[in-house]
Length: 454
Image (cartoon, rainbow, N blue to C red):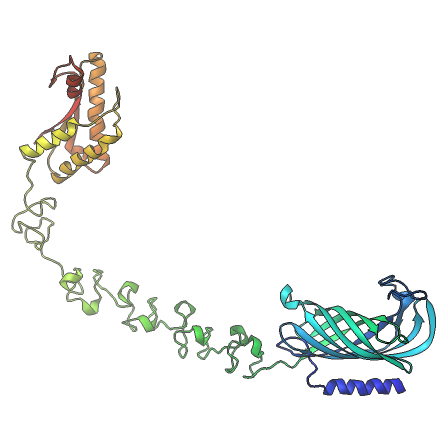
């Protein structure tokens, strides 16, 4: 009873020690209760003790355990993972290594600075730690100071309740008190978190610690109750939709009211929520002809086309005479002699692979130049004529000239020229324009020509 009284007094001191420290920033204080075991065997001494860590887990032969609550501690979190713990323990010593003892009373008060590895592991349920500290231990009436090294784990069942498993090596400063191990198992209970705004979220985790808020938003408020926290709500005092960052859409047109120029009338996103009855891209509020499509440049009204040729008067160089778009609204005309001459100069320079109807790479630009002329006169019709030199049989030359003429026609059609405007013919070695007795002459005779048919 005398020793129990001493432990009770020590416990009261621990609870009143306001600067003794403990667990994490949310719950800086912790109380631990449990049982402890004292082992005097694996301490590196001669018999009846043993070498360092010999039979460290031989609790049946070497552990001294009091079958009742025998350990109590108070802890406080310091900072950066450091924790201070003050603990008091009692026990009975009936095993001194391999020898027996006469039920000696044991009690100790210890202080330990621990470093928690919980944040480094980023695990909420397990928290290993290491510690160093000192204390004072009595065995019966003999007492001495100790230097303690500690290792342990906290296994957290919840935010506030956990299981502590700890082992401490206690080196005695006096020869009359044996160095020993003390193992502790118990429950730990964290508390003392600060919640300035009283919203149930600790200040450490509260993004808005001075304004009551919701757990879903890390303690920040949602004033209009639309499920979007005020900091991310473009309309924090008016309930709205998440897709519009908390703003309403009164007319349901997909444009939030804060960006809707016509918030009470359904409209188009492209017109800032305003309607466009004639679909001309000009909002009705700005359209002088709201029921008749027209360009914005003419305030939503259509441009006139007096001659009905599809070219608006503003662009028609012959507004009172039906023409074509290609000729700026004026009647179509056929290519001039000079244009046809230019067209044939291009055609004669088309290069084909030897004996084939495929183009050489350098002919692409020539074909594009011809295409531009065909495109400029969309109502003119043409015949494309192919010619060869005299080398080879008449039959093969005839077929080759036809294939080359058709190759030019096919390229033009593939690039947008109306096929009904183009005819292809082959004339083989007929109608030479130079002698076939020289290489230069034969080169000139291998040619394509274009003629106007209307």
